[in-house]
Amino acid sequence: MSNYTDRLGNRLNALLEKNYDAQKGYKKAAENAKHIGLKSFFNKKAQERYDFGYELKTEIKSFGQPADKEGSLTGTAHRAWMDVKAALSGDNDESMLEEAIRGEKAAITEYEEVIDEIGLPLNTKNMLHNQKSHIEQELNTIKRLDDLK
Image (cartoon, one colour):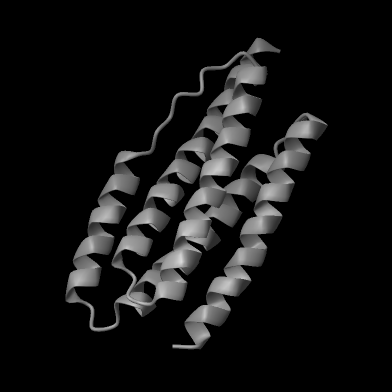
């Protein structure tokens, strides 16, 4: 059982890390966005991912696992790329929306992989499913914003 708990803790920590990366990415997108409404939207998304991270951290600790992730090197590199792209792009807001779409699609896939884990406790599965569903809904919002360009 301990082996499963360790594996589950690792899987949840990976999601936690991705949520911190997404939070920082949305903050960076808000800084780079030109349109005030888009800045507000990206700031809202950053807060949402912070909240998801808090839920995940609480769940990880409930399994007696360490939850001390703050983001990945890949996420840091991606945010640097967002800065470069914003500096070179004529339509900064469009590029930020495209990056958000790409990131949300990847997040959905990552959530699905963990949700499909056999023997996942029901409360953990429900929390992950709720977060994934919210990400899917927001992905549709981002796509509609991207269509307005």
